[in-house]
Amino acid sequence: RAYLYYLFSIFGSFFMFSTITGYSLAYIFPNVPYFNRYLIEVSAVFFSIGSALFAGEFLQIKKCSRLLQYALYACMAIALFILVELALGNLYTVQDISYNLLTLQVIVTLACGIVSYRKGNKYAAYFILAWLGYMAGGLLIIARDLGFLPYNAMTTHSVEAGSALEMILFSIALSKRYQNYRREKEEAMHYALQVQKEANETLDNKVTERTSELERALRELRSTQVQLIQAEKMVSLGV
Image 1 (cartoon, rainbow, N blue to C red):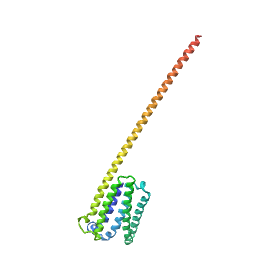
Image 2: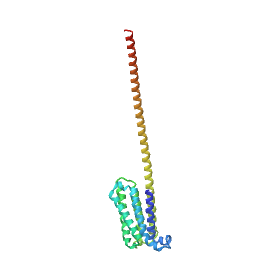
Image 3: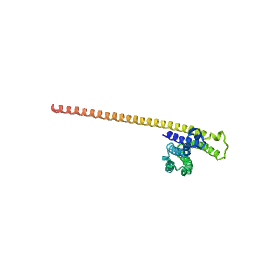
Image 4: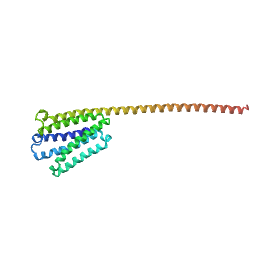
């Protein structure tokens, strides 16, 4: 499920940055320029919801911080509000909200990673590194478009590089997490089998002990019966 949430966020990120760089209008939706006007905000909604769901699931935020869990809920609520406003045609009303949402999303998501790591989740380190790499790629694109950096191969393809790094790190983290889950499951099964084996051995010992007690009692009963028969014979003989 975490991987599906991650793909959801990547989907939103791809269309968001492809629209910023102009690739969406040039290659993906060249015949619907009206749709491209809304694509950044719509993509930001998908990115925010997907990132929040992924962070909550992958980092197990409910176990780490209730406050951060509510912050993720708040991000998703704002994203849904933006989507409703876009459906009503209020594009310019939500543009500033969209940018503020992305800023909030970055801060909350990083905070989730840091808190989770400090709580002992070793996989959160991959999450933090992956998120920082992705953010770096996005910041390079924004800095280039604002004129702070020149147009070159690095600034043009920084998002793709950041996304590739993010996917590699997340894939490693998810793989390690799955392997750890399998190992814990196998250990739990082994422990359960060991407990069952010990219980069976204990039961066998108790059955054996009880059987010995019953056999001893039976021998004593038979001995008593023999003694009674002998006593009756002696009485009948007048001894």
